Length: 262
Image 1 (cartoon, helix red, strand yellow):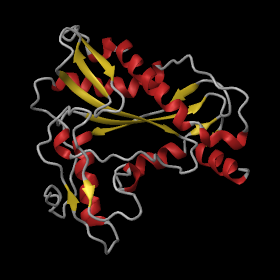
Image 2 (cartoon, one colour):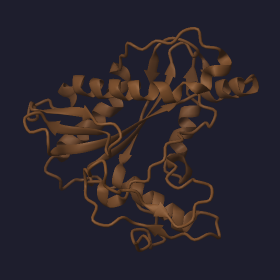
Image 3 (cartoon, one colour):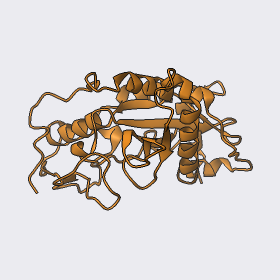
């Protein structure tokens, strides 16, 4: 397969709103609903009796439950994204292991989605201090109106309680794919091959078995696709690390846990 042709210009891609899409107003409202999710989020999940040195083990086992609860919350926020009841037959549905993992689709056909949301949780007290999620989906698998969303979370009492959410990171998924490839080919300080193999005949809402990942010709460190590595999240991550948790900045909690890790 040929190397990427999407990122041959030195000018970095910029996010573009799908203003010409017939459902653009819905797209705007869905974005607003996503930012409102933390204020309305509820989950039956509670954690108790956790050792401080085990704090970093939380992300994987709880991520799926939290993402499921986010989808449930989005559907409860229907008055925000569908105030005129134009989309009454539509609902957000989670489909794990497939891109995008959340789709807004009609309940009466269950086949053709209206838009997609790639939704990932980020345990804010993780030792890495950044989301470790890898986004490798090729540009052509993303509609201009599909969104990539990272939702940071912590426990309500730091070591115990229920997960609470914080302000999410929301960007067009296609832009994230373009920005990733541009960084890989033009911005990295590397002497390795910067080529990227792009899968052929890819379209939005692929089947689970479809090859949809861009693959770098050389990636000895396994860093291709790491969302936090190519600049798109820098300001957002720094803001999240300064957020107070029980009156103490998140970054100070991380430092404390790492110092006392067994």
